Image (cartoon, rainbow over all chains, first blue to last red; front, side, top):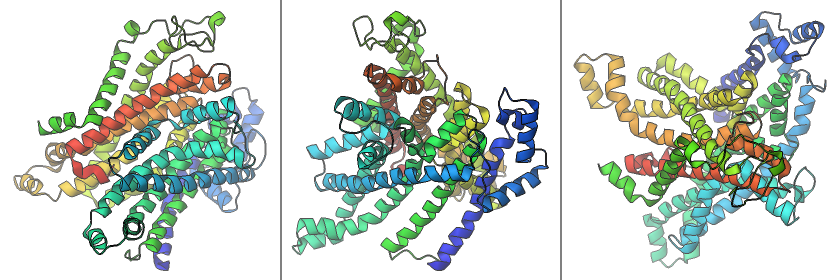
Length: 306
Length: 277
């Protein structure tokens, strides 16, 4: 297991390096003069030169990249063109809210997705099954930002149950996390249903039932344990979708997270912040994928990491 | 024939095909179907609720919402088709060559794909827009680029399987060149996964392109793009909820249509693909 972890981390290094190179390139491949583009249309020649110097845009490419990597290792992501604050600081303060939002959505995905899926699988082709599978199909097709707007319209504008925007207590978390979780809940519910139905057809379940095991025990103890492995895989793979959806959800609900930071800084052409925020999201995603891989081993001892 | 019959028997897929067809008709015949000019504004009539004159109401500039949604079908379908075409045209050859030749080239391509896939979902498209700047064409290009890694992976997987088949060996024994084998023998056998993936990608393209529009990074006003319309609607959500409801409904329906059609095609063309998409 440990050697597997080390190997996975080693393989992640070229990927992460590639990610840093793409992020590094964002600024360098800007059409026209990058320094001019970063300084803005109305910048004075002096300011443009200052930006060029500060970012080392006048140095050879490989030196620039080496400096960029060196800065990264020291946790130095440059300074925001808009606020002048260190990017690392800005990204960090935005990181916790995003983590909070995605964690809440992941929790909802696990609880709701698996429960709905199990209930569907135990009563296949019933009214409940058809209804929940249709709803989940709708959940998969709805754009996340529109779902957010609709929930906001119903639950905060009309009913006034939850705040429409911002971050605060648990009440602020409800609408954004439900919005973000919806498509993942839908996917996990459908997947749980089909996986569990497949497992329930296996002979050992028939055996269990034949020897008089209660139906609930056959489902929850005998079948679910085996169905859980692929299900957890799918939930883990949803993390990318959650991070990607967070960009849109955070914008709808004015949630002060990294996703919204990316959007705001793209609109404001604040390139150092774009770089920092994108880098953090991508790096997170890479490490989460490794963690998901390791998790399989914990829930399925049959997997050997060699 | 068997495939077509299976598709027709698949009721949900048929419904999906029907929805897609309706949207295609809207896109093609928009000028004849739309009751009003989608660009003509009248501030005196802004944010009106649905009425007999304006079945879905008017937007913040008094433009007819129904007409804008109908014309928006053109924008969204065009964006989806072109971005999927970009993914297809770039991704399929790379995936095929990578799977067929293997070796160092394959290794490099796969590491490249790993890197691109490290930017989850819409983030890669946002990175591309950050470089090129917002706009309809750049958004299309951005979504197209972010589809490339998926095509590479899927086609490579199919080619890896096919290149060991006997008919490939036979072609080689007859002296057929590598590129001819890929073009004439391998790719035609990859059509099923490519068609299914493309249909599902059309759904994703509509979601992502409208997402970029919503964020203000895609099509710019006054273009009647569904996502862009939704982005503007948030400001008026209290006074005029209809402006937020209908464009999103159009997106959801179009995405549902392509998703159902894609699922149906997958089951009809090759049920073994089920685990892969």
